[in-house]
Image (cartoon, rainbow over all chains, first blue to last red; front, side):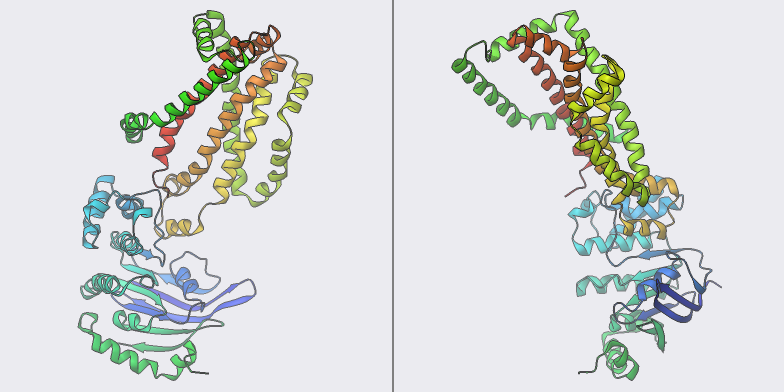
Length: 245
Length: 260
């Protein structure tokens, strides 16, 4: 069984403690999100899980066959056009140039890019289009585990929903597992099987919420209802400092 | 290969866009002619006379020998600067200590007037090729070195992280992530290094050798042969413009298409 297991994870930058005793397990086909206020160590945790940072204390065991990462700000290569940007992960995996280009064009169309955009450089793309390209680049390699670093935060509502729908389809077919960090509770409720609440200074998990209704059956009513419910929760109020002072 | 082909394909269009530049050159020549009419032939020969002298000179074997000598010195000096400047600059850029230590040295190299280098080189190497080549190297090396250094120092950490997340093999990391960025810094440095080399080679020859275009310029001066002096200047500027606008600029446009 493919899984990502985090056990007793601590992390420091210099003398500042960033993460304290993080434990969780993500299994195949599951969506786990970590929510918390900005600056709470979410990104650090994600980078540790994705092996972009070295683990200092505790352990991260990743047995997923493959993984990829979609970043908050796109991170496209400015000197490559749309298709070459998408193809980079495929080429790194040793696909031939021809196959990589074909697959990239196909997924670009699926993510709402048009053929006339294929040759464009990132400087000529809007923010939303860049994020589409970034998503396409992460998903074209058919990862069994996807890391998402607040990828929807800069998008308008329509595009946000469109990209989430693509993910929900993939989740429904059990194609993919997702580790997702966000500060947007509604987003987390729409997509996740399990939500971990990360409280800052130092980052530690204070509460877990589970949702068993399949993602494809979650409508707006469900999301709003659950959000309203979760916002009453004392730990949530405390973590996000929602109380009016 | 595909790249070279694209440069060739866009070349006629690029040339066609040069009419404005040609018009401004003609305007310059017109002002030159006005200067001739005001100050007379001895001070400023007319463009017509200059170009006549030029065409006579270009039919002369010995002038070509001088040009070749100068070309040889400039290319050896520039070639060495290009090689060592690029390599050392890249290496220095990858190590914080090396880049910190090299900065004052570069400031010394850049700050020291080339004429002082020529004097030193004449004492060290005597009158000959080595003096000229040495001066060209000290003048153009720091420019290229700094370009390469800046290129490596400014590599984007976010893109590196992205490359790691896709587990790019080292050769792809170099070709797709590092190289285009570094090249966008190092290529303009090569161009300015080349311009510098071409200017310095003439100056060094004028002072330190008995052959080459710089020496011919010195001879023209001593004989008050202004048309020949101007014709030599036309050759120098013409060749620099050819290299810059016909060879380098089209390449630069193609490689920097992705820039804002």
